[in-house]
Length: 234
Image 1 (cartoon, rainbow, N blue to C red):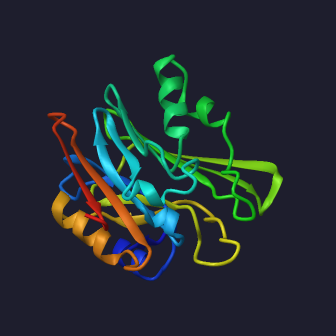
Image 2 (cartoon, rainbow, N blue to C red):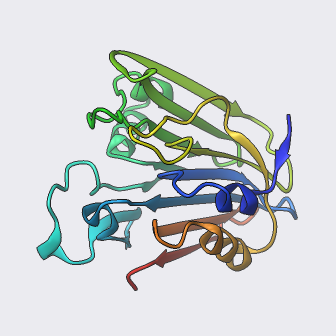
């Protein structure tokens, strides 16, 4: 498997849409999480990330300009006990509720499908980081643009490697309709502390389309958490 430079991957794609990076810090001490959103329409770009007691949520930067909140206002990150859930939609809540009932991440996502925004049928991407730093990623897609069938893919990484991570995003590239991400999550290099990592991701996202970024480093020995939010509008 080719190991990619995350900065180059971000810089070379003007519109990956929404993206999740999960991995392990180069010093092997921290689980690493990044989640970003982008937008082409005024409605999608009119957003910020704000902190909540158990993670973050999206909000309208200017509420007077909000048109349809149904697919753009949600909780991308929720923490349940020692697990961190990150997704690109309200399936965050589905996963949290299933886990709280003693059920699995997989069971939760088998009740969900792609977003109802034809003709794009945007994939739902999700991830979960366990207490020991192991993580899972998934993508729920239409069948090559045909909404009559759902495809669900799950990827498990039980022993993360220092300085490595995996990157999944909603769109392969810009287009009309937007082409869904294909294949396995990309293997990428993870470097630096939380501030340098955050700066690298933000600086390499397309300047016109980027909206917000959230990063989180979890110390696997102490449980200490560091997080950062970057909003284009703030």
